[in-house]
Image 1 (cartoon, rainbow, N blue to C red):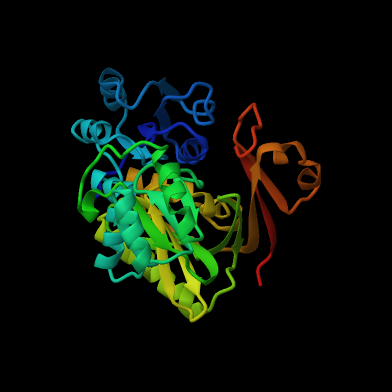
Image 2: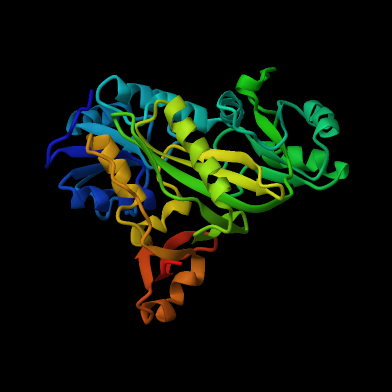
Length: 371
């Protein structure tokens, strides 16, 4: 049964970064207020939200006041402590559900989930110790990458292993030289995962939206290029065949349905030379690789999420222009004159005052006529 919010209702957003900022702006267009919750002061979302709570995610008193002040809660940041998500779910509507967050928070559970929906992944093994890593490298030989199962992003918590000589150094990198706090022996709770490198042609991602009525609509795949472990550009249309695009949207649709998701799901995939798809990871929230939708489509990823949370119908996200999204990282934000003079360039800045190396300061969508 659809539970529709009324105009003027308040949507709570866990996380107060740039994704929260853009969610607030989308909600305002549809007549909703927003209340953001996160630990950072003068954050991108705090600057534009109707109300802001600056508190730690473990602050139960602050969570109680937050839950009482909103009609529904969503996420711009999935690595929220389980206790916080569970507390909110007991006091208000939370979309997506904790199950979707739980799967996407842990790379072992994520890979097992992909297998359950018949979506292939690169070769991988769960790792809980240096000894297990040494054994796994026999089955998944270098080049490979070791990743913490939880909390890693933008290259953090990762170490490449290009030869067996680098095994111990990689282990020390992801553990900070300290033994993992878990001695678990199962894939369900592995500390890290070892992933084999993939000889891929390109990397793509699909943003799927699923409403309260179960309807799923997908934005078409974007082709993504990374630099220094961060997304640099997303290009649409992607240089893939129609059959590959259909298969990719099929995977994203199956994933959203299997999670019983209400909201957004971004699924990243590798396209191999044979045209096969290997799932890399997924996130149940707006995604950097979906920012191109803000200017190249009739509706964007942020509005689709607000629609899903609010019980509004999802709309056709058909693209009306070709587009390249470029991330503005660090000092990139000091060189905007060319974009500012280009009518095809649509700039989105995040309100961050200090441009540190590696910090996402904004993005620009460069449009051209649809081919």
